Length: 125
Length: 106
Image 1 (cartoon, rainbow over the protein chains, first blue to last red):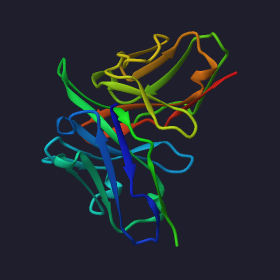
Image 2 (cartoon, each protein chain N blue to C red):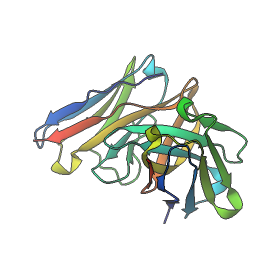
Image 3 (cartoon, each protein chain N blue to C red):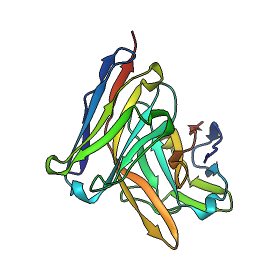
Image 4 (spheres, chains in turn yellow, purple):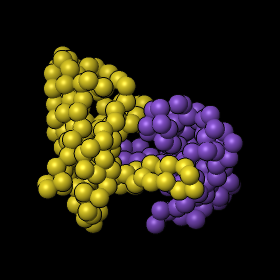
C-alpha cells in the first residue's frame, strides 16, 4: 500500500525547535518530489516546502524561509522538516505529501497525490 | 500569485454544482483540486485541470480557461459535502492553494 506517515509533532514553546519526520512506503521514494503542507486550526491549506528527488532543489513559503529546513534520506525512505524559531503562527497540522511534477504542452504541473494523516504542532507557552 | 475561491457553495442532492478558482492567467497553468472532509486529510480529486485519479467518481470533472478553473460535481451526493481546495504551481510562489470552498449539500 502506498502511504506516508508523519511523526514528531507536539507542544513546543515559542522560539523552540521541532523536527518532523515522514516515513514513506509502497513506492519508490527516491523517484518523487515531496512536500510539506500545513493547516492551521480552522484555516485552509498552506504549502510549506518542497524538495526534489535528490535533494538538490528546495523551496519554501516566504513565512518559513530561514527558520525551516526540508531534507530527505532516500536510503531510509524518509522526509524531514526541521523547524526552528517557532512562532504561535506555526501552530498547525503538518501533512507530508508525495508530489508529481512535470511539463505537458509547455505548461508545468505540480500536484500532490498521496497525503499522510498529519502531525500536530502546537506552539504555545 | 493568488488563487481565489468562494467561501461557500450550497447544492441540493442530485443537482450539479460548480466551484470556481480564479487567478491571473490561470488557464495557462495546470489546476488541481483536493477534497477534505472534517477531521480527514486532503484527497486529490482532479489533476492537470481535468484528470481524475483512480477511485474518484466520474461525477467529478474539471475545466480551466482564461482566469478561472472550475470543479464540477454532477449528481451531487451527501458524501460530497466537504471543503474543496484548488491548487496550482507558479514560478513566483511555487505551490499555491486557494482559500477553500465549503460545499454544503442541503
